[in-house]
Image 1 (tube, rainbow, N blue to C red):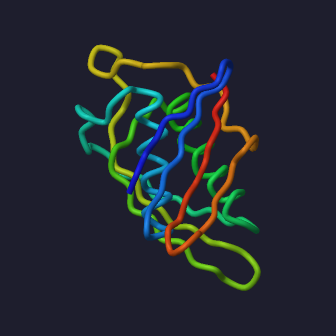
Image 2 (cartoon, helix red, strand yellow):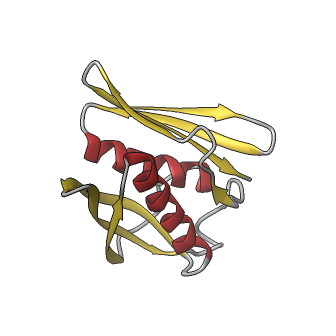
Amino acid sequence: MAYKPLSHTAEIGFEVSSMDLNKLFVESARAFFRELLGTLYGIKIHQEKKVTFEAEDLEELLHKWLSFLLTEFEVNKMVYRQFDVNIDFEGDKFVMEATMGGEPFDPEKHKVKRHLKAVTRHKLHVERERGIWRASVVIDV
């Protein structure tokens, strides 16, 4: 698995790669929180949350997943570091079940590296090439 930040003026981005599609979505979530907090260290697993998403394609699924994580931080003040993802193709759509483990955001303990505004669809891409899954994500800051 690999993670590489991408620079842009009003946006930040990252690329992740994995041999496994489920792990690609796990690594995307970890990269998202690294961009938000700088590190995942110090996040304790005090709470778990399960979610399910459906989408017509993998880009839409990744967008829903990362947008949900941003909402969890902004609205519910939660930060996560542990993720379990299972993606299946059912009928004509992708279905993702995920479990996240984390804790409430504590400004004394967790430092925000940069404020993230929205996960964009700009350059959002998920592909499999030569057996390796890759995702590119851009986030407004």
